[in-house]
Each structure stands twice: as C-alpha cells, then as structure tokens.
Length: 125
Image 1 (cartoon, rainbow, N blue to C red):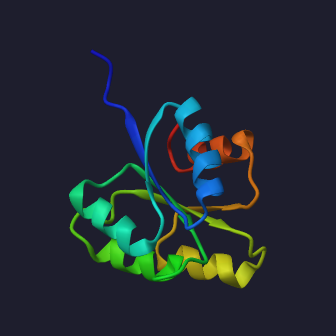
Image 2: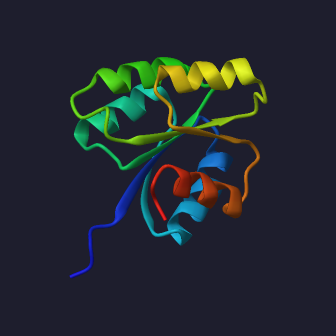
C-alpha cells in the first residue's frame, strides 16, 4: 500500500493555464482537480480539502485574495498550502497575498522546475 495521492486544486479562469498546471502537477505525482473561479473552488474545498491549491490572482466572480480569506475561514481551510500564481511582479501584491494566508507565490508563466521548487518550499517534495 502506497500512501494516498497528494491532491491539488487549480483555481484559475484560464483553461490553458489549468491544462499546463495540471500536466506539471500530474508528472509530480499529484491528483488534480480544477475550478474556473473562486466560488467553484470554495465549493470543491468544502467537499474535500486538497493538500495544495494553485490560485490565480485575477479572476471573475471572486479575486484570489477573496478566495483565500474565505478558504481560511472554512473548517479545515487552514490545512491546504496555497501557492498564488500571479503576473503581478509587485512586492505589495505578494505581501498582500501572504498576509491573506498564501504560503508561496509563483510568477506566470511558470515552468515545471519553478513549480516543483515552490511545492518543495511548502513541504511537498
């Protein structure tokens, strides 16, 4: 019996980004689920908390910040490691994300190696 698969939820309104991220995460041994907006993402977290959430900053319905604030208030919502994906190479943005409860951030576009490093930083090797 191996240990259960690590799970990751990708919350991003771009289908392309979700597809690229999914591919990288699956090669890293994650079981992947996707949500195209924060509301959908929160509903999926409600159904079962993932180990990691890859979270887009700018989305319709709910921003990444709004998502993370609500996630952290959910039962068990303190568990997932949240990696913010942002095109905003802006220290203030990143600080805001971290103070809202993000664990790490990654700049878009990212590649396999970058994402793997960020996941190692939050405790997934």
